[in-house]
Image (cartoon, rainbow, N blue to C red; front, side, top):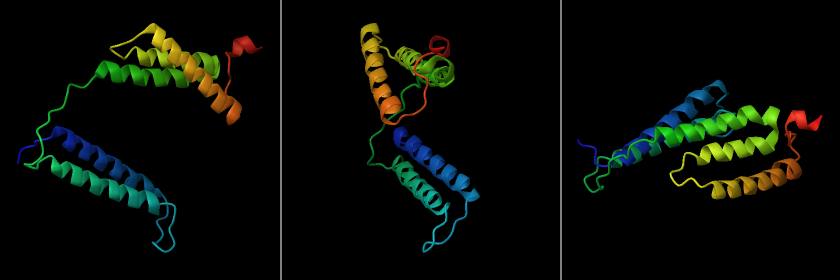
Length: 153
């Protein structure tokens, strides 16, 4: 059997891996029964369904009626910059506040794009700052520091 569609194969593998993870990590909770479900019942059933869905999607990769599709090269630089931006945000949020952390997040993540534009990135950062402030600080009243600690004392 020859793999005709690599997208379907790897999508199926991803679904199966997430399904197995759900089932393995939910084993630490009590399962219960269908009539009286415990906290581990839903994640276990969901994990099983994800696994079966992954099998079905992965099986279509071998179908003769499926179109041939190869995977594009993986963008290590782009994915690394996006992951780095999230790590920077997480590390900077406490000491630098939400304003500077979001600006760092947006500019580092935007650098991963092949169409990086300072103007567009600045507009995106401003929009995200306003939206985050309104939703998280004012709306939900989360206790994020808005500005760096050294500016507020």
